Length: 199
Image 1: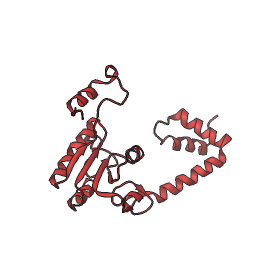
Image 2: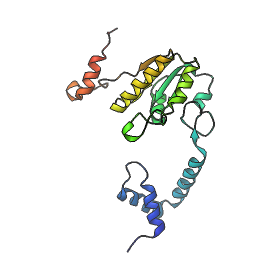
Image 3: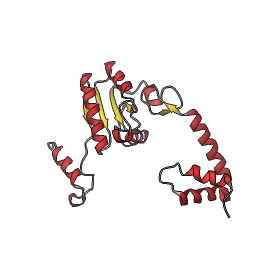
């Protein structure tokens, strides 16, 4: 017996989520239909509202319902500090874990020519315009320590220097509580080459 067309459509729609395969999507669909119809209706409305109303901040490219996100609209943030991150989730991680009070630029990805992601897709022309205004004195590059993240960081640091902006990079190395024998070689090599004086 085959599933109804609407059920198949629901299962297929749930598969767009990362990490959700056929079986997981099927379990989710059955759960919503069997035990959580009210929750499913709320989910449907929230998804519809979010897809219609959430766009990108005109300054930093983070998700926002308004032309400017709350961080860019805040007069209490330090406009001379700009932190470039790959994704909105990276921005959130920094906000939750640090006392950083500057502003952000969300790339929404990283340079990856093989995947067709170049400077245009990351809004780097918009970032260049922002750096050329002269308000930013330091750009903190907080891309991930992957091959693409490092290439993006290099590109961003060159761009910052062209505009007289000091580029800095988040430190990478041995995690707090980590033991050297269990840390991968590239992390140890990076931590070793980036060592600093003990104060």
